[in-house]
Image 1 (tube, rainbow, N blue to C red):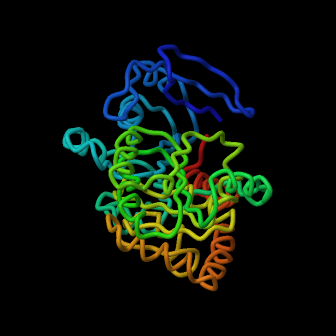
Image 2: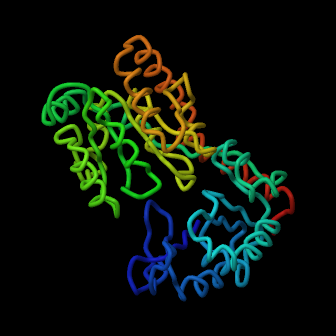
Image 3: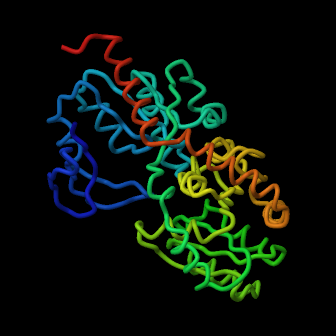
Length: 338
């Protein structure tokens, strides 16, 4: 196996990670969240794989594969529609649809996204569901004592948790608007371009110590933060939030989840009434009502906490890899690889 990605720097490097050859093609710049690389198409041209596995959307990689790719079969994981880059999409759409027609199999991460995506519906006959999964081990084995230490550090009372990059589509502004009505504090873990505006909003709402911006947390410390919380909230406001892996981290930690209904994987991972509650997006009152219900109804909290832990068993990295292996076997069987 060879992995081909764009580098963070203006130089191409080749290294081995966990026994896998990784080519990091020199990056020229990043435009509209898209890494630009002249080296990547050249590197791709020199590969002759039995299967090329693309991750969509990445127009540079997809165009390079369409023009220069030499793989015998092609699999594509469809992560998300192109949401915000409408100008780019006008030019890219014809090539995108032609490429999707020609790939052998499309992997989708949730049935919700398959139903709600106008693009995917055109190619339903070649779509295969393979949900994303995580390594649950470190969350299942997290130290309750470390969690209690973090909880004590931030004060007394119920604690809500958000983990993620602070981007527009995460919907944190709506959660902040809901916080005056919620009998709890909110711990925000992560950095991102919305940090300053969110800090300003929290100040304008006079939330004080009800909202804590913890910043970036080391990956190895994250399980303890989940242990510290009573409830996980993913208030995403746009379809750019296509799945929400952080929900699986919370559920594997035994936390109920409150998320929003976007027609994406957020409400497939977190099932309403089974592992948490799902509310309409961009609705602070609905967020406040759902969160308060879980914090005040202890029987409901216990039932959904147990349901969250049980449902997380369906989304393991082992299940994901088995599903991808089945897709590979299927496309190889369609035409023998010689």
